[in-house]
Image (cartoon, rainbow, N blue to C red; front, top):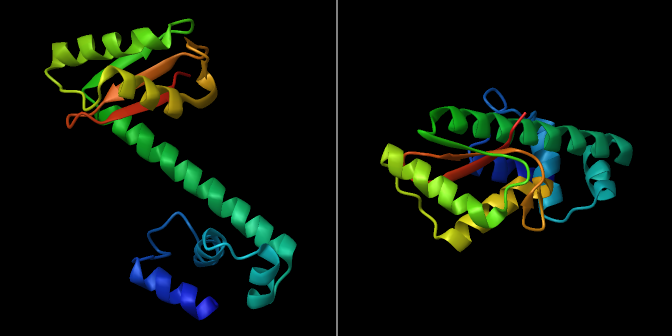
Amino acid sequence: MIDEVESLLEEIGFDAETSVLTRRQAQVLALRERGTSQADIADALGTSRANVSSIESSGRENLEKARETVAFAEALRAPVRVRVPEGTDLYDVPQLVYEACDEKGVKVGHTAPDLMKVVSDAAGTAVSGREISTPLIVGVTADGSVRVRHQQ
């Protein structure tokens, strides 16, 4: 089991020196993604299930931090940033984004319904029904990709 996961990590280019994950976190996450139970992983690694649970939790937390860092970097580079205030109807968001993109000469890669879905999915609990319940920043990159961040 461990040999297989090590081969996988090598194949996909995992490097603990440059990753936000430790080698052990990468091993555990790779095994969990393949449906291996924490108990079976613990047996293979010669540790406790509680330790595997802790390693998995830390790994997932590190990945979330990495995703947030990438989203932040993309937001900084996005030529279009639209502030969507609390209380805005989700159906009004595409027009706000399209107008801001037109001003900057950026083409959005989504139709209005697709854009509403992208915003709603990315915003999570910041959208309640059709209402924006937490202020958002919708960024559009030069290639038309849309990134959504909760406004702090």
